[in-house]
Image (tube, rainbow, N blue to C red; front, side, top):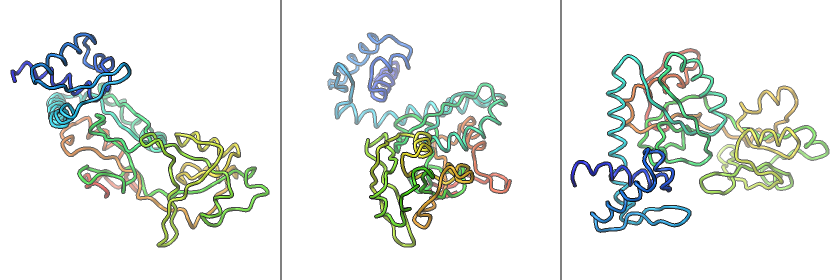
Length: 311
């Protein structure tokens, strides 16, 4: 294929990822009609349909999916290498996209970045709240944040928090006149505040553990939310029990606004970790962000990035 047709392949990858000609055209800074013409010409040259178009969405055919899976990572590697070369100058620049749930963004990532970003005016950060297990490579994020045991083995992982103790809590108004739950079975007689997972669309099952016993509790209640802050507000207003990281509710428990229950069934998860593909290590902007949000217990100096699930 002629060298100038690499732009056509980039157009295909962008449409496939955005699942929209309108959004892809905006990202590529071309008109929608020009982008459609490019894709039609590419399909004609290859002799195979690459995209299936409807009035509402765009999806890849089997041939299109195979091609995008093959060439997409190569374009990302080229972009990473170009960014690394551009950053050899005095001032690091570019945009680092981070996906995470809202608690680590609010309590960990943003407070640390706010201290560092003023030193790098050409370094931009995009923060996205997402409760799904996002594919950071496929969705073009630079960094993802999850608990340490949820990270794929081929990623580089860096701890950004100590281990996180979970808690079940409710307001004094909700618990008044009710027996406090002692076991997972007791939760069936309580109203609980559920979390909707964005990827699967299902409800999060509370991951409980006591000694060697581990189970996932399916709970019911009047309120379903899709973020920590919404769940916390619902619990404070007396709409039921909530299952959240202890750091989220600690200050409210200290003030008596929330009461913790079933402490012996609440597990400790292996801390929040930032993770990224190994090929992104060459980015100076990425290194600055990772170093800024890295967990440093007792002021200890930063250590080298760890393999996934550790650090």
